[in-house]
Image (cartoon, rainbow, N blue to C red; front, side, top):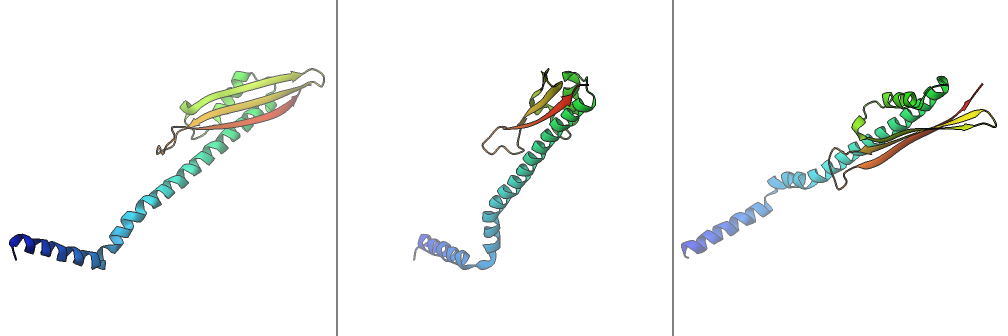
Amino acid sequence: MTPRQSRRAAIACRLRQLATDPTGSPTTEFALVLPVFLLFLFGVIEFGRVLFTLATLHFAAAEATRFASVNFPATNAEIQAAAADRMVLVDPAGITRLTVISQEVEADQTKLITVEIDYAFRPLLPIGWATIALSGHSRGFLVEK
């Protein structure tokens, strides 16, 4: 047997030993399962962040509508400031639109206040999308005396 053939035989023998040796199985299984687990974990975290941000937007819009009803002659700028103050743990740079629409109805002396907030949510890990568009809105009637 030539030295080259004996070397090939030794490599083949070693590969057979590694293939049948069970000591590396947990490491291999861990390497295969870890990416799937991390993808699932970060997906759950991102989903929670999206729901939290959406709830915060709806809360801010509802509180701004409430602010308008409690402070009746409030201007649109004051109502927008009240909505912006209620958005806790939300990046202000992501707010794409914050509008207050006041519609007065002369017939029954009421006023309809609509607060709409649009937000561009940026995920922690970019997994195929840049931003997610979220919106919160609220409506309330005010009765003029």
